[in-house]
Image (tube, rainbow over all chains, first blue to last red; front, top):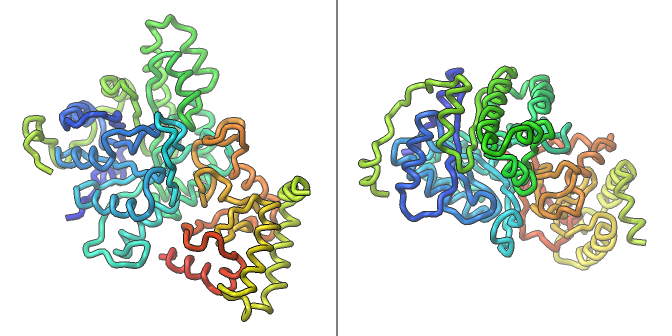
Length: 322
Length: 155
């Protein structure tokens, strides 16, 4: 049976949605996924699983998403084009539907130079736009890109990424438009630390009427320290951390920087929420998942709408066989 | 010489007119523009020489230059087909090769100076047919190969 998307229901109901990102795991034990998911699920409507995040090998996105689905959570499977050609991507998409994953985020992916195996071969047979359209053809026409028929067509809520914070700024809204035309129904943006830039982007998006055609969730996250902010700026492709944020972190002693980072994140969520056309936030708390609850609570986004089905308790999840 | 030809890219309007002109010039020869013959060998040579020098063409065989700001998307390390990825650096340089300007930021700027085909930049372009690599894009265009790709892509 093809899954349906609870995230889609939350967004369609008009609630301000909260999604959260599962930290990449390097373990063969599913309990590490269940434990983290349990923490996040309390404060979010859906949980993203990264696909070779930062161009490093991890427990795979499909694997984590399937574990989440089996435990009753709502996964958003991220799927990137860096590591697989179109044959593998379509197989992965179909498997996601078969395993109960109702949301897919189609990405191009960071280059291999960003990770710990820059000696790997990049694939990039498709890009995010090609992957989106491929998924929509599979869903809508019940066929693979080759034309070959799929017995039971998959059903997902299709998403894509957007980065309003990097050049060429005037093209970013148009690229969003192209992604909608390719098949995107929801968007999760790159980390937002520059709210004025987001406002400009959204003004154009509203002028073009795009906010009526796609649900936009803005990426946010706490900076753990000045050091980690500077590291991210340097090493994570597409992340822009403006001077003003750096200054605020610099302005407090290092043992207070984490609290300052949390405070900045909460303020950004509150400001973002005021921008017309924004339908939710996507919280990426890298190695700080224990803070997601506090951030969401301080931003005034609790309680989350009740889930259609309660996640299984950890004990039960242990016995779920795949 | 190749340096001068390369700089032609910054005359996108001239190039789009050259494209349109070439298309018109070639169209009466359509019956002869078929894959596999001496005509293709001739055109492959011509394309390698001209597009190679001007655009750094990689001979993907399915040229979309007029849809991508007269800038070859195959020179993008991720071979993006539909605009810049989210990794573009603040100085407009490439995520993968930091010393290189992002191919797509240049493509976008150039497309704005293309009154004839500039609007094509907003069209969602189909995925690449990797089998066409090394063949003549002109032949593929006139013999209907490109149209086939477009059709399978349409919904």
